[in-house]
Each structure stands twice: as C-alpha cells, then as structure tokens.
Image (cartoon, rainbow, N blue to C red):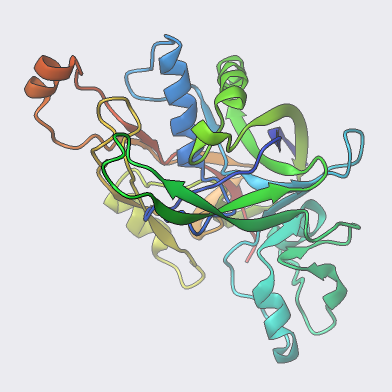
Length: 333
C-alpha cells in the first residue's frame, strides 16, 4: 500500500468551473490540476513569494476529484476517475457501466490491479448516479443549479444583458480533494490559506469558490505493470517520449485544449497561448513501479508588444506557467 498526502476542500459557497470556451451556462465537475497549480502560483506571487524560474514549486498535484463526507467526524469516501482501459462487460450492463465516472478507493484499487468490476455478475446497485461504491452515500451530494445573472456596463452606456450561470453545490461536508507529491508542502499550505479567502474557479468576486481545507492520507494498492495512468493533466517532455508511450494496442486516452484568458491585472484582455494536454485517467505504455512523476511545465504567455505595455502600463514581461507534470500510477491491463 502506498500512502498519498491529500488536501480536502470543503466548499462554503457554490463553485463554477469554466472550460476553454468559458461558457457560463455550463460548469465542469473537475477542477483540473493545471488550473489549481496556476491559482497557487498566482496567489503566492501576489503576496511576494518569488516564483521559481522554471515555475516548479517542488510539489506535484493531481486534479481535484470528489469526496463524500456526511459530517466533520464522518468517514470520508474518496472517489477517483474511472481509468480509460477496455472493459469486458455483459451487453445488458452497457448503459449502467457507461454512466460510471468515479470509483471509490476500494473499487479503484481492485480496478488498477486487474479485476473486472463490470463482468457478467456485477451488482448494478453499486452504481449510484455516476459513482461506483458500496458505501452508503447520497448520490446527489454534488448537484448543479442554473442561476440568472445580469451584466451591466460600467458607464451604463449599454442595456443590461441577462445570462445564466451553472454552479456546483456540495451537500454536507463533502467537496473536492487533490493528492500531492513532493517536499514543499509548507508553501502549498500557505497558498491554500490565501486561496480559501479568495476562492477558486470563475466569478470569485461575487462569492464563488470559497472553502475551508484539511489534510489527510489516502492509501492505494499499487501493482507493478508496464502500463500507467495519469491522475493529473499531462504534457509529455518530447515527441519521442509521446510516441513511445502511445505505441501499444492497450493505450487509451483523451486530450483537451487548455488555454483561456490571462488573469493578471492589465493583461486580462489577452488570451494565453493554447496547448493540448492528455486528460486524467488515460492509459499509457510506461513501466511503473509504485508511482512516478512525468511531464513538464510550459510557458503560455503570448507574443505581445511588451515595450509598449511597460511604457504605458508598467507591465513587464513574465511567464504564464501551465503545469503538465502529472502523478502516474501503475495499472494492470
């Protein structure tokens, strides 16, 4: 068994997580590792902590996944993403199996060690919404609600424009958590103490994304395998590494475009450069014993007229880091 440090975010307000298109009427259910890492970097820089030249703070984080917790002293049920490996299941279970996005730790351990959770005799009662668990949970502990909003121009020169925002709500003491690997947890926790007051996600100025945090441990029973899955968004080091990791019939992956607007004051009318990143739960050909770290951090600052920006606004050129360093765990196929 391997113990991972985890940080649980208990949300005290609703949460909106935007995607590349920044649609307000839809929210993601996962806060990706690169967004959380960028938020950590931003608040540390804001309070004067020098950002490392390569953007690496000395720790790597997973993306943020859901956990269920009834009360402060209740047992926590952690969920991890269903790995993208090919399942052998009976046709009559197809609809149920396709709904499953999250496995509890017990099921996840069985799954990465090669057990077929969805074979002919699988218990459909274990599927609770998008969650697969034997624990007694309220499958609606995370819900989405669409609320009307209005945009008003600052000088009132334009008519008010209505729009709709979908937000996440968490019941009880539930929320999102992430795993952390590395040594510099003191800096990470300093960032969390600031972030809890500033919020994460979109529209933090109107009260979205505030939280309290706590830390704990999560145990995974890791096999030895020539295949591995990422629990963070992943940017390979090179084309050669990518080709080697994808050269196998059992490889299964998704990728997504990441970018968005620069949030720094004075630059928030500019978009970052975009990059395609491998999604969490992808399976690669990669010898993995215990766990390992792979990937790189890249600078997505676009080409701008920095001489003009510095002269007119006092803004100096600086990197906009996007972390594609990922926690990998071995997976038996």
